[in-house]
View (cartoon, rainbow, N blue to C red):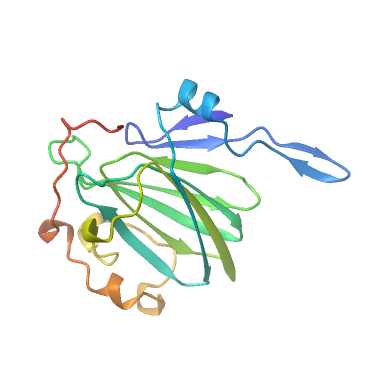
Length: 190
């Protein structure tokens, strides 16, 4: 597994070693030992999967303290633009984002530590998206930031006026008004 740093410390792209032959391909999508050696001391407890059609925007989601989650995400069918926004008060990169194209063909994964809001845009006709979380979903801690917040400067690579959003995602506040209870001093990992 190759670990590629991004512009925000702690958010990394993972590229597996893919073995190709006439039968197809094989790669190890996750190894606890290698992940801990190269990325972070994490214990994932929940896997999730979603299927979406072209133009769907999901996010920007996060869970409030003490239920915050680190995520390891990948696209197993199609293509998405995956985005992580730093929402740790006191962070030198607060409000900045990382955007990475994840596809079934490039096999890339994105690791998003605690203290980030997360979302993605579907760029293909259909996309199947999977993610591992290091904390269980807690509905009482569910929160989000508007995916349409122009102050974030995110180019979703789809026309926002044509985007398909859930009713819930349309109600998220702007970053300036969001209930954020993380700061840079808090640990990123349990």
